[in-house]
Amino acid sequence: MAVRKLSLSWQYDFTISGFGRQRQGGFLTRAEAALGEKRAREDLISGARKLLFRDGYAQYMAATRMKDRARDAYEHVWKRIEPKLGHLYVEQVDTSALDALKRSLPAHLGPKSINQHLILVRATLRFLWKRGRLRGVPYVPMESVPTKHVDWYTRQERDTLLEGLFRLEPQWYLFYYLTTRLGLRTGEVYAIAHRQIRREPPQLVVDRAVQRGTKTREARLAPRKNDEAYVLDLTADVLAAVDWHVGAGYGGPEYLFSKTDAFPRYIDSHVRPLRLVQQKLGLRVLSHHKVGRHSVASQAVTGGESVKAVQAQLGHRSEQSTHQYAHLGSGPQRRLVEALRPARAPHEGARHGNVASTGSQKCAPAEAHVNLASTATREPIGAMCK
Image (tube, rainbow, N blue to C red; front, side, top):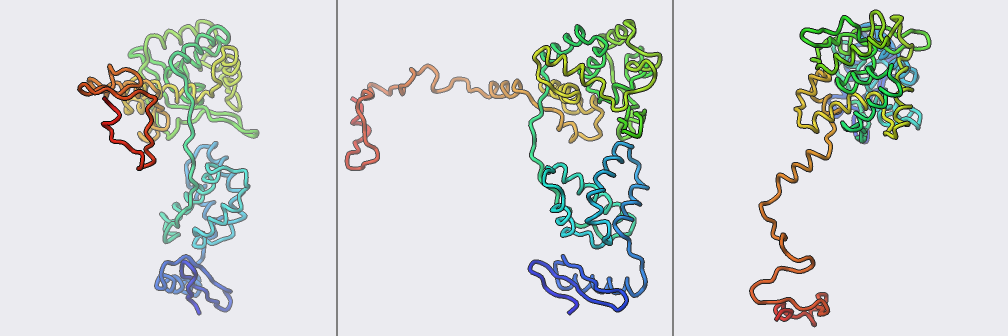
């Protein structure tokens, strides 16, 4: 029988001499399974070349325009995907095959890491579908990722950090001043050159970023994320901080944070000074990303700025990305509760522990107990008051 019923779906299963056994399930109805069988027979008989998933992945990586750092991450993830899916034809990479892939991944991987594997598979399948190599993209069973609480600095904590950096690590003071005032990414701060700072009007052009290197590749300059440049307005205090940094001899001939026009391979030279100052001052040990972008967005939203303004400041393409950074503090919630306060609450003015008296009735003393659980001894409410 070429088409058979499974427990939850339909499947075709047939054998043609010279081509071996052909089997695929997951069809919702018998008609869909029969149509799939017909197409499979026609492809085999006509000699249509099927595409292996590993070849489809190679085509996707050759055609896509992604930065070296993302390409390295995908190559690392592909090492776990290829043994399970690489030998399959792209039509055979369905939901059941993806479930098998998830079961084969190491047990220590969390939901977010598992999703990174599925995202690569889904991107490859969509690439082949858009180019007519696949009739449809199957359902990709993504893992549910719990929302984590993200820490950020208040303005008071930020000011304490900057004061400590200026006193203890002055060569890194401007680096974190720009980070905490403008919300720039790590690579964007490293890439700031003198030519990007305009005096009239005071602005900073953010068009490049330093990409983190690897063991075999040095860090290098590249276009900013999404290949989109944007301009940030500067205030007098930011320009004064830049002038102080250059006047103190910490800047280079071209870049503010590189005297030799070269960058640290892993662009992590800023990590140790930040951690030392945080520990010295007793501040919470937060990363550059949380001290900068998360704190800038959260401080702005908590202070009443619109999400649109924060989106423009952080250079996000969509407002949805901004919401991941803008964490609301307790101040606005307190003000909201205060604004909804009634003009006069009924309990205001009443003595603690007593119910306000009505007319001339006075409630019985606390020693008088009524057994409400027993209907035999229950007394009328009026018997409790005189």
